[in-house]
Amino acid sequence: MLHRRFGWLAVIVVACVAGEASESVVPASHLLIPLLAGFAAAMSGLVTGQVPSRVNRVSHAVLGVMIGASLSPVGLHRSAGAILPLVAVTVMTVVFSLAAGVVLHRVGRVDRATAFLGMVAGGSAAVVSCAEDLKADARMVAIMQYFRVGLVAATAPVLAGWLLTSPDVSVGPGNATQPAWHPISGPHQGAGLVLVAVVAIAGAEAGSRLRLPSAGLLGPMLVAAALTMTGAASDFAPSGVLRSALFTIIGLDVGLRFTRSAITRMGRILPLALACTVAVSIACAAAAWILSRLAHIPLLDAYLATTPGGINAVLAAAATSHADISLISSVQSLRLFSMVLITPLLLRVTERWINRPCIP
Image (tube, rainbow, N blue to C red; front, top):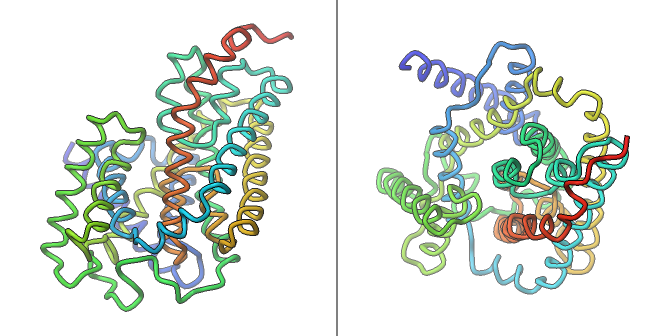
């Protein structure tokens, strides 16, 4: 067990160093380089496991703290002014997902529950966890969900680099003048680290007790946001080396899910599932353009706010692209809640035809 822990620590350190080395030529390198490395390792069979669940949970909780600590009253005020377009975009995302599920079912001969759950854009972990209860193929749902997450995680940093027009915009606490080796954005590193740990643990526990979707992420995010917005605490957002390690773990986690056996299991429907995923992503990008025009939001912020999951990778890309993380986290959280809450309801409404066998 100890040997395995040191092995994972070495993998994370190497991936983090590789991301740092390529930072000047690769957008969001601490996210993208580990993702590609994880994908290559999983496909080649060099690594047969996933990032340890405890490490994964810690990374989600710390990311939640970073997001919450980066919120600002100004950013939330801008989000409130565009509430109607944001709700409209969320509804459009649901429609896009439903349409992609119908295509996958009718053309790919996939049972309706599996097709629909595989195409739901948002709340991937929650969707996968309830797949078996809804009589869907949980393995295929997981693969399709993480294909979407992987596609977004791999392309969001690149597209964000193309769309970026305001490189001097700050993402909140912490900025480019912060020393790279500082793990916390504020001047008090020790106290900041202790506060991050306390908020992460307390937030994750509260999120679990409240049964929040993605409780390990949203719980710490809400607690950190409350502390920041009320002025109870400030300057404790993870940054520098801690943020780099955080993004490295997220990238590895996504990349390592694409094993050879997982892709083989998809078999004949893989091209169609990938095409549907790309189509949903393009439709969401079109919705981002509309949102940008209607609400006068920069296209980069609108794109990252509406791109279809996963929330961890998108928010990591937002932080490294100096985008408006307050707006993006607000919209992504709204859609996450909406998708997780709406999906079981939609399946119950369509129960008459979900379990009907496909016509050969």
